Amino acid sequence: MRRRAVGLGLLGFGALLLGAALAVRLFLEPTMVRLPLDQSGSTTIADENASFFDQGKLQQMRGYAEANVVVQGDPKADEASEDVAVWVSGTTITNENRMLITPPTEQTWCLDRKTAESVSCDAAELNKESVDIEGLTVTFPFGTEKRDYDVWNGNVGAAYPAEFVAEEELEGLTVYKFEQSIPEQVIDEREVPSAFAGGTGTGNVTADVVFSNERTLWVEPTSGLLVKVEETPSTVLRGPDGSTGVTILAAEFSPTDEAVAAKVKDAEETAGQITLVRSTVPWTLAGIGLVLVVAGLFLHLTGRRGAHSGPRTEVIQRGEPVHS
Image (tube, rainbow, N blue to C red; front, side, top):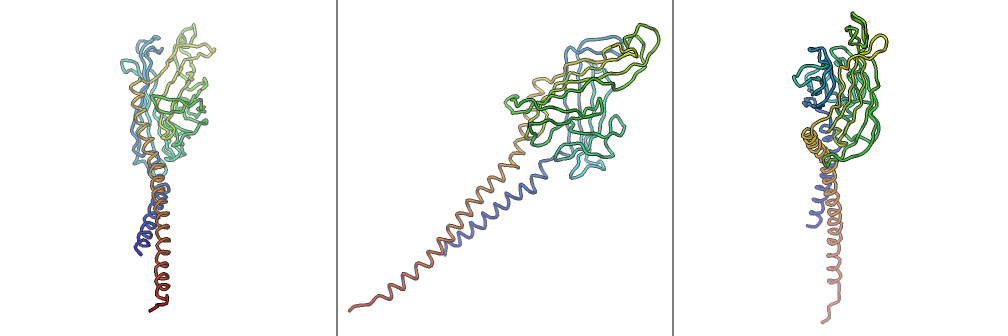
């Protein structure tokens, strides 16, 4: 009787753990493994020997330049919800004196909190103008795959493929390497002195602002976090006759070793938390629950057999003839 009671108890507790494992995967994981509404972060990449046009001195310069990207979530935005995160991004490129080399860029994205993909919303903006933002932005999806992804670029207002190149290790962390090429294209027009646009005449001309970029991205696949970014942007003026004028910016931006180490640490912690919720906790609960269910069934069934065998033996013994 006692074995049956213990068996039933183990069966119940095991079933409870199996249910808890299922609940973690079905209910807890979806609420935890998604983009935060209150995102806050920044990234700085620099080049010690960049070429840029100093608008104060009106001459071509070579020296330190850095690109700084700040991303801030807006949880109070009308579009922010259980499914959509609204993030605001600001990008500045400055010289060593913190003077702007190119105009700053400000963007507002609405992102699917599960896939990290941009979704259509009224809040989406590029430099205060409404725009349809497509693809990924500053983070890749949870469970990034070894395939190509479209990644948005605010300079050109379009998404271009980031092609999967290889699986590598960065500071001991497994990462996926992607490469993105943004072809040369006109992004603006400016009225400038003819000499700045490659001309020989006097007076002003309307010059095209021509931009291109090559990007390399290293992504921690479980979290989708970017742990390292390198870029080689080029922005030049091109005159009406097709002549190339001044170089507004030509740089080979990369992060410091310390910055990469910090990003790696963040990615390791985030990936560990995701693995805990997605795999470790549910599989542990399911494993223990299954063992308890099997043990409970065994005790319950053997307890029943034991209960029946005792009385039958006693009846036989009592039925034996007694000889005097």
